[in-house]
Length: 295
Image (tube, rainbow, N blue to C red):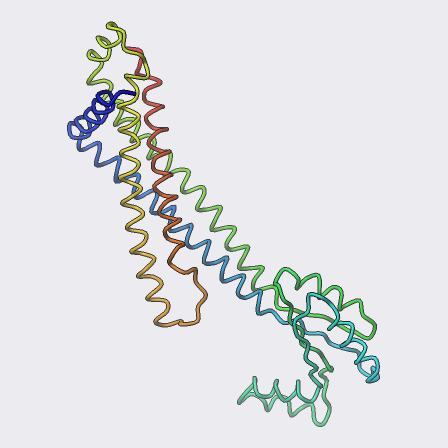
């Protein structure tokens, strides 16, 4: 492609955007708002995934053993559990220690345990941690099959519910973004359509003198790309400022709250938003040209 042709394309794009500046501003604003909402849902989902993973990594498996199990049986459970590759640590908790911890958790309400008298209904147990959150369910099932184990429990419900909430947010975000992207494509295609309509006589003359369809199409496609890049850039900048302010606010009150680090995460998000803006611009231009090139 000749340099003069490239210069012609970009000059036509600039002239068209200035001539239709109100529609251009509307297109850029719609792209920016749509992609900003997309980015907000994306960082919400990513942070909820990180929170769920953090909770899962802290899950402890409580292994309750049968009352009356001899020390030899208890030691055998501990040995077999410790030999499992997925197990990181195992700690024996006698029923007396478990009762004392329960009293500490109850605080001022520990008097409700006075009704028990000298009896202790709590079983002896082990606290087991694993190397990976993915191993929790499988390890708990394996321990439950050991002789002398009465019951195995682990706090998976919180993380599971969090993942379900993440799935709903992801689904809602996808539906909302589909609607926003459709509206954006519609506005961009209308912007290009106005330009094509205003230049319909010029385009007809160009065809008569032998201009190819692609020679005519390129300025309009580049205009759509330009609208997408500017809109994507605006949304990326706004989202970085939003995430920076949000993380600072959260860390001021919840210093240990698990969040995705701002960089390089936001660099990837910004690149994705600008890329999405380009694709939306190309699609909007293509839809418009398909209907209005026959002039």
